[in-house]
Length: 153
Image 1 (tube, one colour):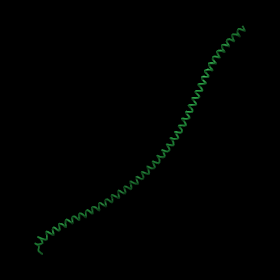
Image 2 (cartoon, one colour; image 1 turned 180 degrees about the vertical axis):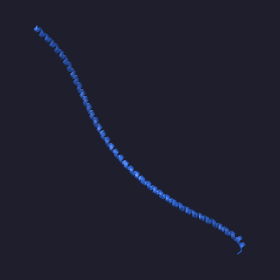
Image 3 (cartoon, one colour; image 1 turned 120 degrees about the vertical axis):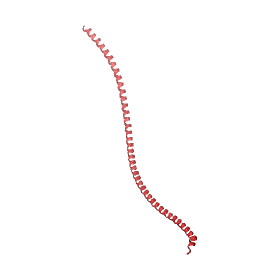
Image 4 (cartoon, one colour; image 1 turned 45 degrees about the vertical axis):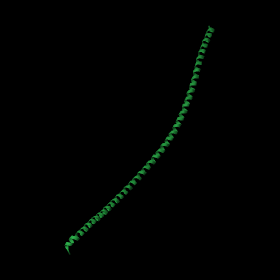
């Protein structure tokens, strides 16, 4: 083997070829580490997805529980509202009956007052007539007593 010829002609080609292989190997190793990184990220993404699914399922269950509780409360509020409406209607009916009864009582009292006023007027007239008749009678008694005294004397 001729070392001089090798070092002058063949070695630079081999070095260039080795440098190209080294660069290609580095590129392939980079590609391999990228695949490894991608696989690691894929695993992390899968874990994150499963965690998110579990969290979403938990939130869904919590939302369903809250929805059921809200439905129970809504039903209770509806029942209370219906009871309140019934009580309000009963109170309105009772109030109307009381007002009607009060109006009848007021009318009755007005009629009684009118009747009492009329009787008072009649009694006033009768009292005046009685006083007049009493004076007339007293005058007649005095006149009669005077006649009796004149006859006995």
